Image (tube, rainbow, N blue to C red; front, side, top):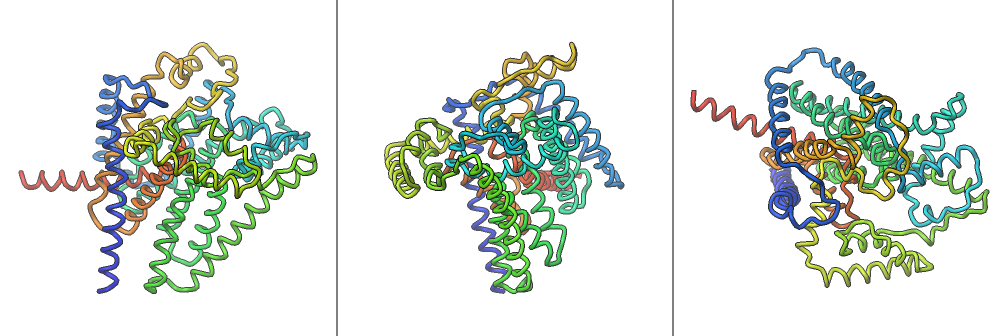
Length: 496
């Protein structure tokens, strides 16, 4: 009886937190769209409406008519999509700038043992050191088998492979939760349009590399009942955190639910041992990788200084700037002006409090919400020096056509932006309908949704920070769609 009441209270709390986040998002998008002045997307209303109608039509066909008994079909579809992705990327590929280029160049230097003269970036932002460690050994792998000229291309292939594996896990997760392959294929269809055909797949960086982690943790959680699941989820956790902190949100939710299950004796206490072991192994792996890069840079007398590290206070301060909480170079200059981490953190917190007193907080939150959620392309093309080097077109047909779609200056770019915007907004709307019904897995997804919303609202605003969690958001949208579908079927039966 007590356990039942506790579950109801927990569900209500999660429902309230989720409602707060989804209402803020949907109200910001529908009622306050005009106040966004940073990273605003060029949307054609007519194309948006047509795109939504076509998307709804195909979604209806999938739900009503796609019900194959052989679930292995998803593997064939993934292979076909894999080939299409490589073909598309080959035709629109370019070299980007910003952090992604720096990480690749630095990883390449590490792999080839070239001299590195400046590591100040990693002193300030050591969160990308583990990414460098992974890229270093991927580059070494392809280099040592004789494909030195294809090292960058190989990292893109890794992106494509991992994005497809995440898509398969998404399909399998939805199929397991609902036992409806039509829902699973619809989830995959949404994922195809928002992620697999997204040009972000062509950028070797943590946003795409981390795609596999949140959906892997969720799939392991719902698919296995033995104690090993606690080990593997925990093992993935710190790897995810050291690649992309936003992909760590689901693990925090997992720990919250795990704790409540543990104290209510729903799971055996030996599972705690497996959880601790998983975290320990994850810590050893990530710590080894980070120290590996630190030791190699020290050989070149380039020391990564822990005192120069930008802490949470810096990103909290940045999240309160008058630029909509987005990246601001003046904030970087301000934080780097302090000699020690302690001084920096104190100054950052003081500046954050100062900004909090002067800004219009509701308007600031709306602006940040629009920057984070009002873009189905996840702020494609919005980073600095984005189109650093555009390579020659590969042909006179497909290559210019795809560049016209994906490049900001392309003739059809507003079609791309409008269509993915419509699909993304519909996905968020469906998430809003997921509130009805008590379901542990759904509650975990709702709390993850709120956690991610809280993360990007408190700290630096970036739409691409949502990218690694899109598979979980899609599953939540399928819960909402299921509620809509069941409600519509009940009404139909009343009229019969």
